[in-house]
Image 1 (cartoon, helix red, strand yellow):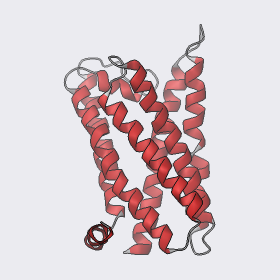
Image 2: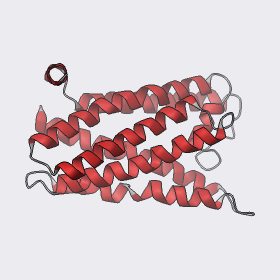
Image 3: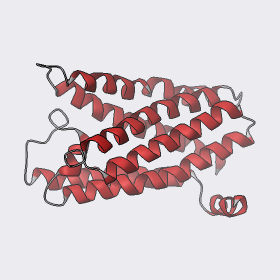
Length: 215
């Protein structure tokens, strides 16, 4: 199995999988948004959660959910590449394995979100969202800790996870407040968008740096 993976990354730099996943992810979200607003033009990042696209009409739900199912699989190839690279640099295995386990946790969450739209399957969707956001928090934290322990790894790149990781936690805390009477949903909704794209930004930062040092 290792030989197969080695041959794959010899032909394709693992960072390319991150670029591909981000492109597909953003493309699906934007396309789903364009389809959604043809029916309901009120959709904004202040009025609707991202996953509302998964319940939309005009095929917006199909595009969004396909994107949520496909991109985690592609992202996984990047996380394997990142983990294998850090292992070659004698990274601390304990935190590194926790990092990859967290990435798998987030991977599972995104798959569940894609399978179970929030309106039709609320409980499994919320479980998937919890896995996704909690997983992304721990992924960026543990990878940052691992990278900071390496003397030759760029400290700014390694530290980026600490600056972006709080967004998922803040969102989850704010989301709980929506179950209280009289709470305005604008801030929790906007924070979810920030949390989601903070994960994308972190992956882009990591993948660009990794591409430069491994090509």
